[in-house]
Image (cartoon, rainbow, N blue to C red; front, side, top):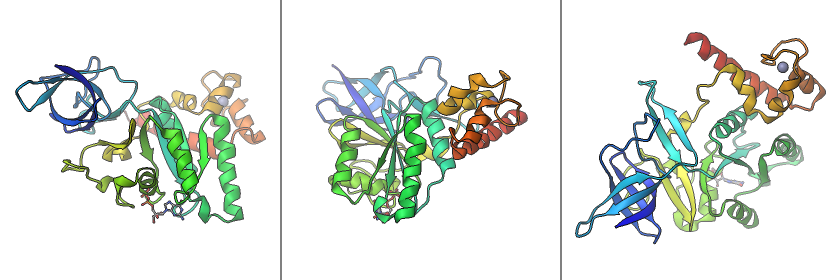
Length: 311
Ligand code: GDP
Ligand code: ZN
């Protein structure tokens, strides 16, 4: 008998799979399943939709197929450049929790995250949390964040994870989605999840310390059921969710406002650093591209150039 399920936890040879009827079962990963065109160390990843075969008269089940992925986050193995590891698959949205203070989230960190998410085709909802802590000047700063990111097409919600009405707004925004939750430690991620789903009882200040029923390890990525059809992916490797191997000339494509201007630069190969008649630099001078965004662009560009130089 075959059934479709969603992988909640994957250790490589074993997976915990949520069936459509709500039951969670352990499954063996059958044989050598290889995904076409991908040399990955794990054929089945958390978030995958899989076809499983229930073995009658036996207490076991096997994964026999992985359904096509909408997207996935991949990490290259530090030892074998040609091999990679899929951290998570089928993400609908990334929630990036940022705070103006306690702790302060930088534009640089935020922009790197946005570039990554864009490479992986994951839409981002920026949650400006801890609004209750802000004085008038700091609220002005929060408005600046909105002014920078909303016109670029990112959703921005100003919230306090301590406020019931704000929590409901977030709950509505993520309902039915598989979420990647990101942000510096201390920005309120666990508080947020606990408020959305009180029965979770995540330890605040340590999301990855959470260990669900029957899960004895925290080394593997897992998907937490927040409520019916709403999932959060908690992946320890997310620190390595870093800019992929792109060429310097490609960096601008992941900044929508730079992408929109680059056709007007005099030189077709303009990298918008010090070139003459650069439409991007002109837009920065005129204020239609935020200086912080341009700084982030240059910083990513330089690291990519460096990588290319040493290859
Ligand atoms: P995490 O590391 O991102 O999971 O952050 P936590 O959820 O552990 O939150 C860190 C601290 O910030 C905790 O003491 C929370 O109570 C507090 N906190 C979280 N959200 C808010 C908020 O919106 N307002 C205030 N004042 N404190 C918050
Ligand atoms: Zn240019």
